[in-house]
Image (cartoon, rainbow, N blue to C red; front, side, top):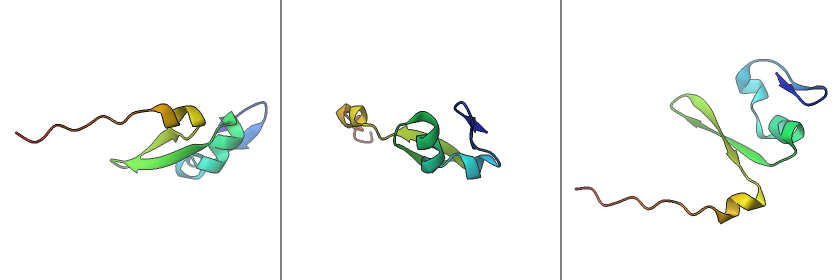
Length: 60
């Protein structure tokens, strides 16, 4: 269940953890990805644009 003064979404986590429900709940754009069968929430706010991705080193 997602709450913000009222119920914003209720049900199975896959039905509630959506970009739309999270944006209504927290007032910020988010993306929900899946990794290893688990949902991962990623901030899509303008501040996230300042994040610099890590470079992967070459395999040894």
